[in-house]
Image 1 (spheres, rainbow, N blue to C red):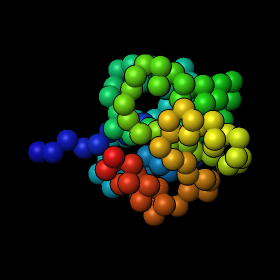
Image 2 (cartoon, helix red, strand yellow):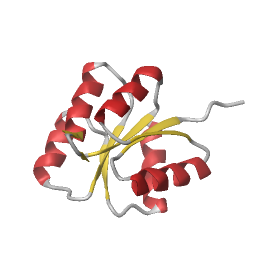
Image 3 (tube, rainbow, N blue to C red):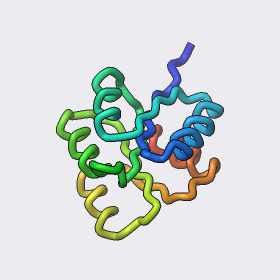
Image 4 (cartoon, helix red, strand yellow):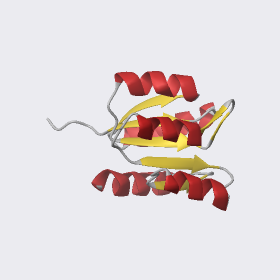
Length: 122
């Protein structure tokens, strides 16, 4: 039996985490979620992920902070930034740190699954 790709969704909005989890689970992906920077670090410590969706705004810390830590730890999986306000500065900084891409809120199921398939082919 083939292993399901494992995806982490990090977002401080419960509705976003739940929506991503439902859409991705229905598409046969294994999904873990985290609501903040510290929770995400703990989940990353104990799991290997094939793809990470990362919200840019995480209350006390930012998704950029977490992306820096992911890269510092040498994790080699695509990271897609989730943003409600795709400013050029934030997007540029994320791409400079190695982000694979970004997805803007509101997120449709079609857009999420298409971007997931593209990222997992890398």
